[in-house]
Amino acid sequence: MHITVFGATGQVGKRIVQQALNRDFYITAFGRNVDSLIDQDNRNDHLIARKGYIFDAGDVAAALKQADAVISVLGGAFDGSDKSRSLGMKNIISQMKKKGVQRIVALGGLGVLSTPENDYLLNDPDYPEEYKPVGMEHLQAYEQLLASDLDWTFYCPPNIIDADETGLYQTSINYPVSQGIGQINSGDLAHSMLDAVVKKEFIHQRVGISNSAWK
Image 1 (cartoon, rainbow, N blue to C red):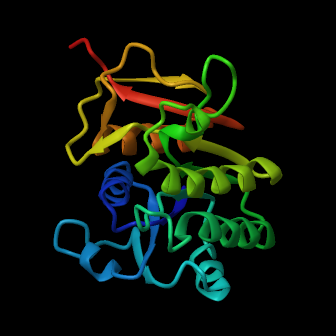
Image 2 (spheres, rainbow, N blue to C red):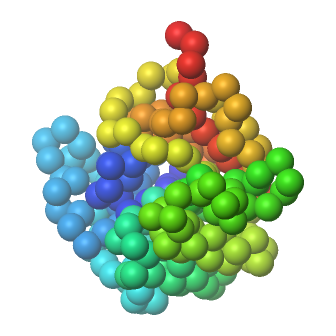
């Protein structure tokens, strides 16, 4: 399997790249500073590091040349001002359709999950104001996937901790994990997103995830 990873140099993206290589997948790692991914630990013919700009249609199309599936873990400014997530997703979807790539697993945020009243958490009066700008970026990215005919999955994690995979995590569909601890290790998030690609899990679903309260 060949997976194109957008946002490959972020804290989740780097772990996805390394875990995918450990599983013997082929990876195209896309980003503006991908040279940092090429070191002695992962230098092999399974990894293509492709430097590019997410708003450039040609760059994105070139990154999809060999792809069987896509993982998008695009980051951006916390205040949502750079539109990397929403406009970046729009460009990815457009180029996937042109290239005939159907499967994408993408990273969003907790606010796109549902409340018990089936509204977005983002719209809850108690949702922190400082998270709403980036939450709206995630929501726009999700709505674009929802309107597409792609086989999408949209992960909506709580606070992401830059830590290794533990295997001690839970997932839920469309709602936050009720028994979690309200945070997720980047290694565990990477593991679950890769599994969703390989096992064809959570198609056309939002996914809540959290490290477990139990050990």
